[in-house]
Length: 114
Image (cartoon, rainbow, N blue to C red; front, side, top):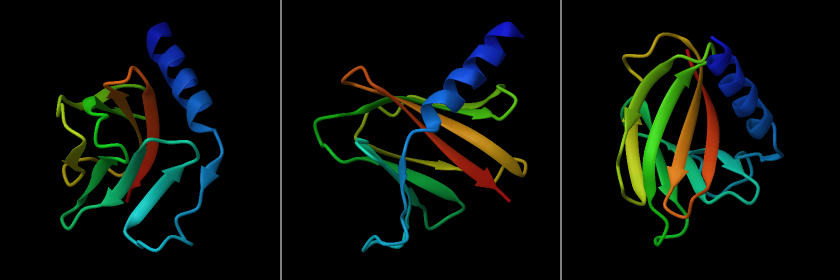
């Protein structure tokens, strides 16, 4: 239980960094950009998201999805610069997505499934 709470606290701490609004972007499908981020979160044609690395040399090693309570909902190991994941089987609520990159960095996104 303590481990889950620490994970949530850490995710919330890192996810509260300054965010750049996607409203002024040329690509309306981009739903989340983070300042100084390597990754871009886009809407998929299906009910899901595409995560892409802005740098083709940086790969996404693992992608973990957590509920707001800290339980792991999904994990994948794409080992590529772009991956897609679907939220059609997720319950409505807020989810945290943690991407571990080949350069050793971690990036966290927040999505809301309605």
